[in-house]
Structure formats: structure tokens, C-alpha cells
Image 1 (cartoon, rainbow, N blue to C red):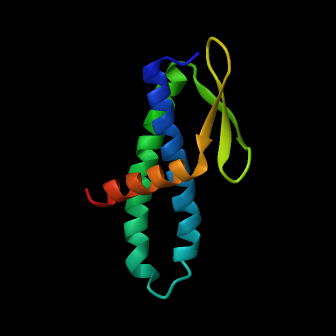
Image 2 (image 1 turned 45 degrees about the vertical axis):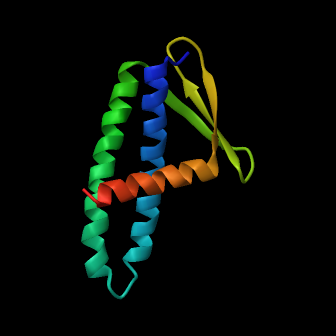
Length: 113
């Protein structure tokens, strides 16, 4: 079972994971733009910062023996995340649009630093 601190850290990890995946997908698209030399360094720095936070969160979760088993898309609105813990396994349901909004907010806040 996840306690409150672990659940908050796990939620942060989920948002960071989605941000890293989105940036990696976007990076491939930006490389093909005419102005890629302008956008690439911005995206690289953002990806580097987010990836560092992602690995720090993952390390803290691993210390508590918490890990993601799998993502399961339920429908276009919800996804389940299967989480293995030291006690027992947990399934957390996330609203896809809420995650997308939180990822956007995270990226904007990192960009404005």
C-alpha cells in the first residue's frame, strides 16, 4: 500500500514520465523543422532538466520498493497504472486529460525558470 508521501511522489513521477515521453516524441518532429537550430537547444535543456527530476523521483520510489508494473489504457478518457509496492500491488486510475494538463503546466514552469 502507498502512504500519502509515496502517493504524492508517485504522482510526480507519473507526470515527469509523461513529460519525458512527450518531449522525446516532439524532439523527433522538431529536428525536421526549418528553424530546428533555434528550437533544438531549448528542447534539449528542457528534456535534460525534466529527465534529471524523473530519475531522482524514480530513485526515491525504488528506495521504498515502489515501481510501475504497467500502464493500461482503459478508454480515451482514463488509464490505469499498475504499481508494485513492498506490501501489495495497487492500481491507480488517472484521467488522461488531467495528466496532459499537468504535464503542460510542468513544462511551462520549467521553461520559465
